[in-house]
Image (cartoon, rainbow, N blue to C red):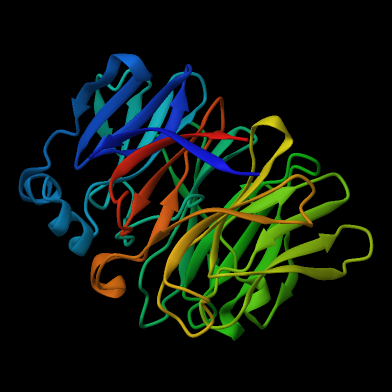
Length: 340
């Protein structure tokens, strides 16, 4: 199992795929890739950016200040939510108009599933430094315009929320929090968070950024650079967990991709549990046996300029696509691969 790099586009971060078009960004600008042979089409630029928009056009400044577009996520028919320069913005899938959402924003960046869709709702969960350990909130909307706070983790209980993700089998919303051992937790809730359940907590095994759901099991990767990182298998019937593999660094992504392959994407943060200073893509056919398929080295200053990680679109269609952040050779580049 290997990845063959077919094409690389410079100065682009991939976000999603809409109507078979790859949607990417550079700074505050949004781009569309209709066909690799035809190159990249600039669609629009987020308006009213002022100083932050100017600063985000510089790659070094945007990395250091955590500026630019962090998420573009399509929901309900033709609507899109964009998180850009610490603002939440509503648009359409043609990106012709923009409306800033009136919701308190404490996040300076978002992880892949801090904006999530479940049932007839869209959710926004807070991911921010939170050194003072204030309460951490979850907001919900059924139209992308009107939002209400539906749940709060109490002060001094967690640092922030890593993921909200709908289970397609039970239609519960699974969540994970972090970062220290006593703040790390995996659980699930119903759509309105009136019933919140804890699956496990108390060590780094329960700290994750993405779930993979199967009928009888749930899988997630340990998002930790403090110790060896493993894939966790959770048995829905027994409630038991099992550790699979020993990966090079914190696991940011686990996905099912084309042709029956599964993917794990690791990052590099410079912690004591990492095996090297690289971000890797691992491939598997069975979630048991994993092959280290490609890797990229960290460039400079992980805490100042951002961790070295791979960014994948929130949907997987056709070729395997990813971008690099803080990685030599592929920082702020869009990479298209074949899996063989």
